[in-house]
Image (cartoon, rainbow, N blue to C red):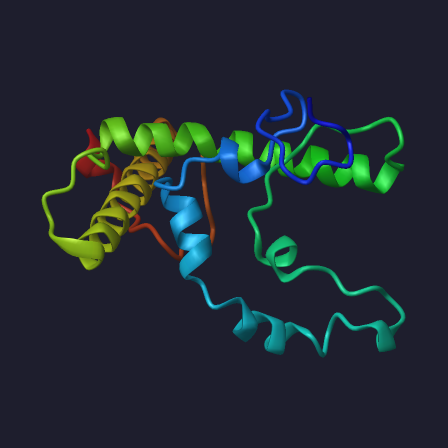
Length: 167
């Protein structure tokens, strides 16, 4: 029978398991975290986050890590709640745009090779999104102008056409 003072334990604690036993070592984020040289970040950030400046230093992995919006807690003050709400709204506004880029502008399929090809594919999809948006605005503007509902004294972006061309 093993006692509490026994250094060797053959049974693992069911409720207090180690974190690394739960994580998958083949996960790309864990492999990335293991390949990053964190001492470079420590040296770069130590002048900004030190005990001499009046605030305790924070771990670099916490400062460089992903910022995901979390649920507001009861102990959060008004500023923290507004900040979390703003992050959630910002993320919620971007997700449908990415979905439309994937489905409407072929962002889901990339035929270009490598990381540079990925970057080119994203830029081309974003350019197509912006061009479509500008064309819709121009079409609405020209339609209103044809009906005589919209008059602009100073046009900078659109060419004013004669009414004879519309009739």
